[in-house]
Each structure stands twice: as structure tokens, then as C-alpha cells.
Length: 359
Ligand SMILES: C=CC1=C(C)c2cc3[nH]c(cc4nc(cc5[nH]c(cc1n2)c(C)c5CCC(=O)O)C(CCC(=O)O)=C4C)c(C)c3C=C
Ligand SMILES: [Fe+2]
Ligand SMILES: [Fe+2]
Image 1 (tube, protein in one colour):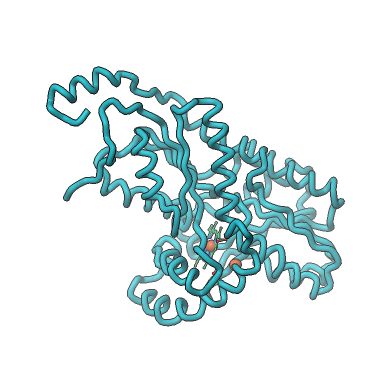
Image 2 (image 1 turned 45 degrees about the vertical axis):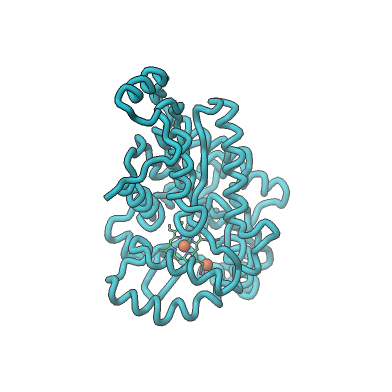
């Protein structure tokens, strides 16, 4: 096997620290043709769907990939903008803002790129670009505040699958979660308070997180606990009592039981319990996307209003807010501690020359 090196490798090249922010990925276009390859890659990941491969292959290729692309495309079409998918355009904004912060603080010693776990820009492409610029040390920050095997560990799988093919793998620091990071909790609290100032309070604040099958929790995934801890800390930061807020789980897929309470069922039942106004925040989503804009902003609003609710407001994700950029930059900086860059470039090049190697 020939291991992959950098195409423009030079012994004189300056060593750098690379930072890679990642998110889930999104289709290329809001059409069935755009959805099919995206869903195929996503739903073929054994970290996402933990079902024996041979059974799942038939369900996925025989049923899901024939029905879901068209259905999902319709939903994506409602959130698509001139800049494309919200998840992609917000990730680009987060990247640009963090790049400016890195450049200001570290010049060109620290370089930052972004990638998606599924689709483009790929993790492999980002690692090619970073290593070609001399990134010998690497911080990877998946933009998932709560650890989940389906998202966080899957990102690590993609990195390792890339490293298996690479000659010079960078020293790696991988951020697995930041669900109780004080700056993150504070940024969420500031966002909710700003919403309260503009719109007043509601009967309840719902904190809705993406769901996962309950089986994953029973098999040891810490996601459920981390979501609840984020909620508790956010509630404390807002001075809320237990009756003022609720943690729910959205975006169910398939027939098995997922984490409960379900967001949609909760919305349908709250008005009957005398809760006529709700505000919804989604602390697990670092960027607004289909699951927040359409599912929380539109679909669940309909459930709530149809059940007799009177006021429903979605509080946007932290996105590229400057508070959020501060949080993420803080996490990056924590992970740079103690890292020195090799500045012995001339000696390195001379040694290489003596050995007849490319300088
Ligand atoms: C099939 C099982 C799924 C698991 C488990 C799952 C976990 C999970 N997902 C996110 C974040 C996002 N998911 C998004 C979309 C999405 N998720 C699933 C399925 C599972 N997710 C599907 C099939 C889709 C595609 C849309 C659809 O057809 O319904 C997104 C939005 C991406 C976008 O383009 O806007 C995000 C973000 C987390 C955090 C998570 C586990 C904790
Ligand atoms: Fe999902
Ligand atoms: Fe959804």
C-alpha cells in the first residue's frame, strides 16, 4: 500500500496547527436527486442505524431510498435560501468568523477549515488542505455540544478512516463534547433572555434535542444524560424552576422507541394541560437546519396551535452570533495549550538535502 503524503511536501515548510470544525452535512440541492446520495451515505453509517447490516441493506435500498428522498426534499425546499442549505451557509459563517479570530490571535500559525461528516466539503478534503499547509497538530471540534455515538463517534470514525491512508498523521486533539461548558450555557441563556426582552415570557420553555433510539441509551450512550444536564444548567442560568421548563426529543425516525418525551406529542398535549404559550430552544443544534427551522419552527407550531395553543415561538440556534464564536474560540484555545511548533526548518531542510530527499 502506498500511504498518502502531501502533494507539495517540503522539509522547509512551516509547521502549523490545524483546526477543523465539522457538522453533520446536508444535501446538495432540495430535490429527490440531491437527497438520495446524502441519505444513502448518512443512513448507511452503522453508528447512525445500529441494525445488522444485511437486514438494513434491504430496508434502506428497497424501501427508504425509494420513498424518503422525495418526502425530505419537500421539507428541505421550504428552508432552502439563496445561499443554499441553512446548515451549510451558517457553518461557512462560523468558519469565517473563527478564521478571523485565529488570524488575529495567531497569525498564520493556526489555520482553520470546515468539513461535513456526510457529503461535501468532506473530512478527507479538509485534512488534505490542512496537512498540505503544514498542519502537524490538529484540533477537531465537531459542533455537537452533547456527545452521541451517532454523531461524535461517527466523526471520529471518519477521521480514523482517513488517517489509515495517510503517511504523516497529525497529533490529534478531538473535542468529544462541551455540553456543560460555562460559556456555552451562558451564551444560550443570553439568547433566551434577549428573546424574553423582545417578546416577553411564555408559560413554558421547551428545550428540544434531536432524539436517538432509546436502545442506544440503554447500551451506554451518554447523550441523554448530557442533554438533561445542559437543560438543568440553562434553567439555573435563567432562574427557572422545574415547572417552568421541559426537556423533549424530536426528529424520530423509524418504528422503534426513541428518547422520550417526544417533542411532537408534548406539543399536542400541552394546551390541554393549560399551557397556552410556549417558547422552544434547541440547545443541541449549533446551527439552524432543517430539524429546527422546519420541524420546530413550522411543524410543531402547527401541532401546538391545532391543539389549542395561543402563542408559539422558536428561539434560534446560536449560529454565528458573536457570543457563540467566543464559546467555540475558547474551546479551540483550551485545546492549543502546551503545543509548540517546530521552528528548526533550515536544519531540517539541510538534513533532508544530505539524504537526497525533496527539500
Ligand atoms: C436514522 C437515525 C438518525 C439518528 C440516530 C440521528 C441522530 C442525530 N442527528 C442529529 C443532527 C441532525 N440530523 C439531521 C437530519 C436528519 N437526521 C436523520 C436521522 C437520524 N439522526 C435524517 C434521516 C435526517 C435527514 C432529514 C430527513 O430526511 O429527515 C440534521 C439536519 C441536516 C440538515 O441538512 O439541515 C441534523 C443537524 C443529531 C445531533 C443526532 C444525535 C444526537
Ligand atoms: Fe438526525
Ligand atoms: Fe426532521
